[in-house]
Amino acid sequence: MAIDLEKYTLAVCEIARRAGAYIREERQKFSLDSVERKHAHDYVSYVDKGSEKLIVSALRELLPEAGFITEEGLAGHDAEQMLWVVDPLDGTTNFIHQYAPYAVSIALLQGKTILIGVVYEICADECFYAWQGGGAYLNGKPLHVSSQKIQDALLCLQLPYNSEAYKPVIKHLIDHFYGNVGSIRACGSAAMALCQVAAGRLDGYAEQYIGQWDFMAGSLMVMEAGGKVTDYAGSEDFTQGNSVVASNGVIQQELWGAIFEG
Image 1 (tube, rainbow, N blue to C red):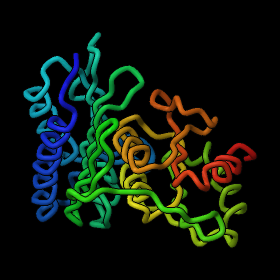
Image 2: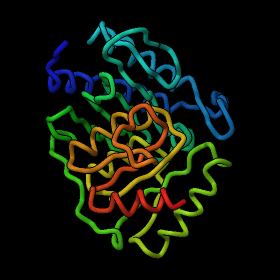
Image 3: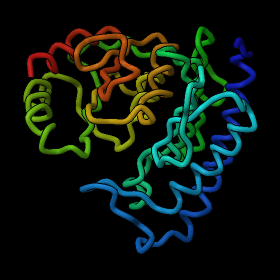
């Protein structure tokens, strides 16, 4: 089934903004007593679930024939050709601590092809969006990745919840890059790290042990903004995995090479 990708993308932007407005309103009265622990250092609250319910309901109305992959599992899929991939609140730990950024992330996946990506960052009121072949945008303005080389690059090396498995990797990456690049950051939201690469604010990003809902929309943003995305094995067939290496393209080989060495 062929759909008007630009039209649907703009409709998803409105859905993401509505979910963001709900999250923003709930943050004003949010209590730590409502936080649940999913796994070690991995949290969820009624706000994540409320946002997902709102998003799923709106997306079902928008495209009834599509299934779902969602972080909180409030909707599923069977044999649908297209799947909405939804993170109703990416950066929950940031949200709990009232520490930016945190965002809504929605993508439309067909097979292994990402058709639509929308990420709405709630604190800064920034809506990033892209559709296949249509470019990437921030609040209506076109995005393009940076042209920085590795020695001046600002890298985002995230710290996933699976700390024991990832600790040797992150130690290697920090040892490899610290002092040899412009600087290193961790922002607490995979979706936003990818959007920052697409916007040229970051030059590269890497993270493993993350869900499809974390990286799907943002990965399309990077690719449509002229950047490069692979998994930790260096494959561009990354949509079914749990790792992402994204960059402006200029530093991709050096960023991935350090991961491969580790």
